[in-house]
Image (cartoon, rainbow, N blue to C red; front, side, top):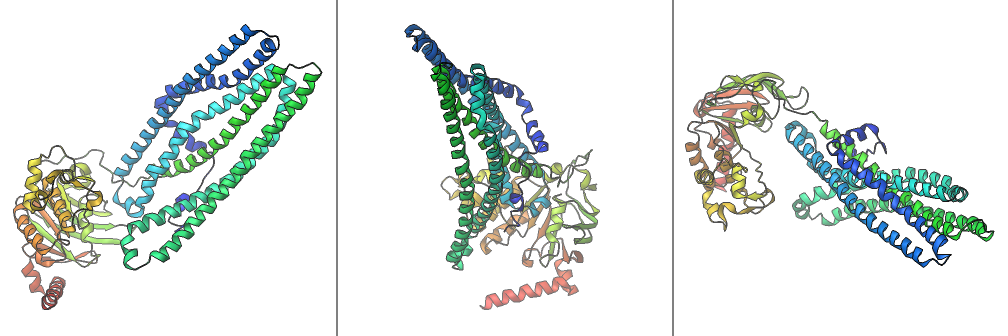
Length: 596
């Protein structure tokens, strides 16, 4: 499990200038908001120490001398400063959040767009849960950096600088006495950062393990319940959950020490002010207003230091998240389009494989020197044992993967010279593993293509026999489809995927075990529909049920990545080769089933 979460274990640097430069690149389009926010930060930061300074004036110049009018004047200034600060703070918070959301929107859009362009080879090796984490959790960490981290750091820094400025302006000696605890604070902060960094690594590691376990076991809950594994799995969950709890408690331990430590230093600094400043006041060389102002400023001084430690945590999280996000963005597992693509016109659907070699991993070839030709309008079936290379043929025809050797032609044009999106417009695939999106029956058939009218959707559903169950639904074609079609039967989902393929009016229709999940009655409907559908279309049918492909124009028999036999159903039976053995095996199974 630790290996599955290796990316989440890697923490990287607390601050990486290379990553930060890339992150700041996303802010450039909104630089005017950044400048505005920094200017607002400078102003807002000044209002904090202004109030203690005004209180000093009120005490020393007006209260001690009984000047009531002057006191009213200072009180009004304090009120105006508070109102003005609140207004500026509102705009600062608004534009900071606006900047964060705009930046995150751009990153999330880029990440999703990039992910859509990646080839299937990338998804074969990358867990889906990890990709979802990148677009959600890791992006949200960057949102904290942009909205609460980068800009608000300026607020804390400027607040500290303004406070120091007012302190030294009022009294240099008292300022030095107050700051005598500063070296201890610096050392404590450094130690805190070091300790919390290690504990943070443990928290992320155990959280990743918890997420992985939850995702896997919620998805496979039916298997857990069937095999009565609730109690053992609960024990494993409790152990993982316990490790996560301990990691969080350890992390909180360092915060529990650091924050009271800062408070203690703040109290010591206040005590030093009272001791030194009070002594000076007794001897008549200090005014009471200065003493009050310094006590208030000292409390203000340690507040942004505590906030900066939180910003460090945000920065550390963002660096780890950005490293994983940029690793995904830097992935170049693309099916590249040609620089100058050939446009397909008047596509008829002729297909030719010429000496095709293909491997998913290095030179572990799943297709070896495959050559065959399908004339436009022909129906060709491909059969063979599991792992023979049947699905690989349609994957490379659709340009989900690139070839190692050889070429594939559509109407005499090499598909490597065709824009992959242009090529796929003429191909529809019905897969064995049906995937339906959350939405409606209508949107799942049309794939939200506004160029496909409702009449065409209904016609496609009628041809495949899906119209009967659709029209029996309360909202018919506007019936809500839940995640992965949870409310529909396997057969109904299969019929919808068939209607989806037909609604797009393909020139090349590919059926990959398309009737494997259909009951006998539905299969009869589909077989009748196929006879109508294949008129004027080229079809490639991959099937284990040999009874469904007996009328194919040609049958290609695959074995261990090679074409072993080619011919019609009758020709292949007469040859008594691999196809004959497959047919005999299925025929015996059917006889046994009937006997049962």
